[in-house]
Image (cartoon, rainbow, N blue to C red; front, side, top):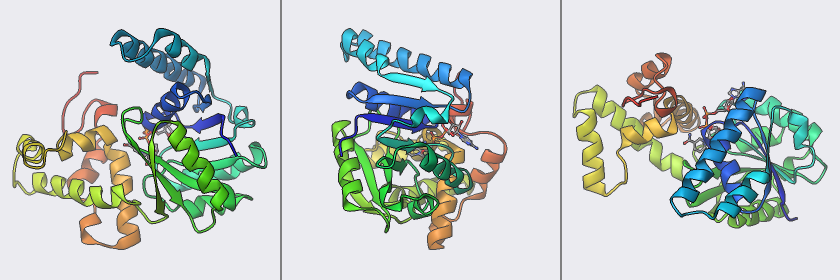
Length: 284
Ligand SMILES: NC(=O)c1ccc[n+]([C@@H]2O[C@H](COP(=O)([O-])OP(=O)(O)OC[C@H]3O[C@@H](n4cnc5c(N)ncnc54)[C@H](O)[C@@H]3O)[C@@H](O)[C@H]2O)c1
């Protein structure tokens, strides 16, 4: 099945980024926020993002206008009824995602595919609250979605080959490089990345080195584009903690046990770039 109209639920960092990618690659997009003001703000942010690319000569003005015209920002979940694919990208919490999947199952057409952008949670547990487990899978974009090349296509035990083929073709049509992975916490990238990020926080906590020394060391020593603490701020410390907790829950590996400093920073509302303060301060 060809995917022409895509619904996205959740307009945070990732939902907005995926909407940007899908619209600029010719897909009709229905982007659903929880309230009208967020929907309006998200649309304005998309508009600004495209305008910036036009200014920098990276996007044609007519293409930017056409991409924006393909996006409907709404606060109404039933507006997703005609979508061929819906990508859920709300907070990393199964207790929120599962009821949403059950609701979406009753809204979209019989042949539509439901996908989750979860970083770590069991996709099968979202599939099983629907009447279409064979048409539910993971579609894990990376942050920032417009810039990152990879999409992990997550195959739960219940998904059909046709579903995996359809979403893989969609990821390619978005200009991404899809890889198929099994439904295990963290898939490939986060299962390998998060012990590293967690241990960077542990080093800061136990005084091995300062924030700047840790980030400088990993940039210079491994040729990484950013250090681990700056990357945690980009991902969001609340999302990062949820990812690490889900990994620990699944594998019980001590490298996945969240470091207390990370938990305390989330409790304090220091969530990284999105809250203006994390390991670094960000001008708001
Ligand atoms: N941040 C990353 O680097 C990254 C990368 C890949 C995947 N993800 C995954 O994408 C998903 C969204 O993460 P994000 O970084 O965009 O988070 P975010 O905090 O930027 O946005 C979360 C979104 O969820 C919505 N939300 C919060 N509580 C809700 C509720 N109770 N019901 C419905 N909606 C609710 C918020 O309104 C917001 O739109 C998560 O599953 C996360 O694991 C994140």
